[in-house]
Length: 256
Image (cartoon, rainbow, N blue to C red; front, side):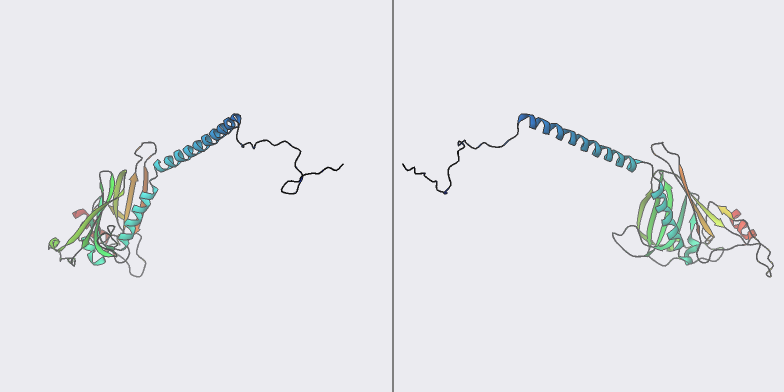
């Protein structure tokens, strides 16, 4: 007796396993709960780290850091004093909390002009702020008149005035004008004797340039959590200054 086997279309024998419908893969409720808990823990850690970083950054940003303002202000005053227009030395004037210079420098307001210009700049203290006022010199400055004649101030023509805040929270801004006199009598065969410098806190027109400036800038913490910080710098006069004998200098200062 012969037995015939029927082959399927592939030519292979049929499987002995029963045919069942295909089941779709998925997560159980327990797996979803575990994944949710783990995700919550990770997100909580990321939020805590982010919040701590932001808090630290804000604390550093709001902390009393007077050094940048002081450094930038001192550097600007020094650079412009070193670029003083020497023929206009007789126009320099100032007081304890302000100084006016005639310089060749770049204006801070570059909306209308660029490059270096002759300017009148004034540094002064106002409302707990260190201010800088600039104005472009438009015509030739008047020369120093002979003794006994008034300075032709009407010939000082300036325009494009602008004011800028250099530093906030300023407790004090002091300008000292440093003079180093020469001896009244000197033996030309020997070096001159050492003379003690004289510092005054005022400067009048016609005095010319002193031998240097001393700038003292004191900044305070607006929150009151840090002590005041005072920054001091000295700027030597480049070029020719008005070197006077001791008697001439004391007479000039005393006459003021």
